[in-house]
Length: 306
Ligand code: GYE
Image (tube, rainbow, N blue to C red; front, side, top):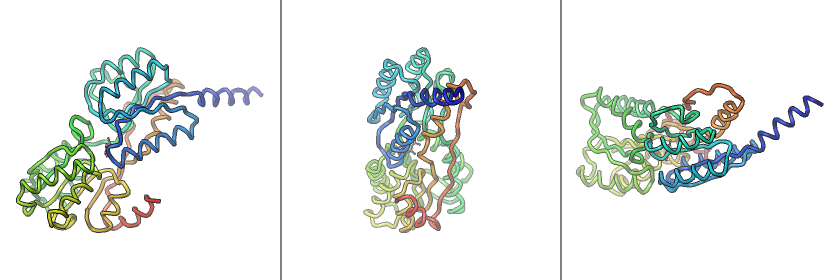
């Protein structure tokens, strides 16, 4: 009976847990999947999730965090739109004894003790992987353009850095133009259109590197409209591995994507549980994904789109 009571008591506390989730918005297919996945994971664990969509604005995220603190939530998940400007509000959460788990992007703060942990991939590594693939594919000779993610986001900063580290090793590889498409399909298309215009209709270009699949999908559209063949005349490489990019890859219109799982709720909630149980939690819970090529694209699309 004692064991039963203890078990019951434990699950009752777990069920009562309330977590606030400050999400960036819904700029990409990847992010929409992440939102759905975290909501489903919370439901499965009996966690009451308070969800707030910041519409891409840091000030909305700060407001959401303050409201979660005022409501006395047990923990907070934060997907930070940009890297800087979080010290104050994270300190407020810490002073209130509320652990904050960063999901998918990182922050730059003076004191890393202001958050519990970060569940995210190594964006620099993703950039290096993309650069290495392109260098191998083009024998180190490629004039390319880059579509950056949201200005000031860790995802954009680090994916640019890692890619540049590889490009710098190859004297005949050049990033001719690099601009933000804000991680959206429309942004990717618009910026690619201007790149193509500025680069003689794209005739001298060898490739486009996009910081996410949605911008690559927009770029593919722009390349087609300019009368060139994406995936052939211009190689396309991006990051995320959303279902639609596999469809484009199966159709020969893009060449490679690096997977980032959107299922970050499991490890994030596990970290909160561990912290509440007094266990040590690592500062960075790394998620990793492979690079996918056209050979498996049709099967991957099938598997991911049902
Ligand atoms: O790659 C992109 C999204 O922060 C890892 O943000 C995330 C990125 C992801 O909008 O599609």
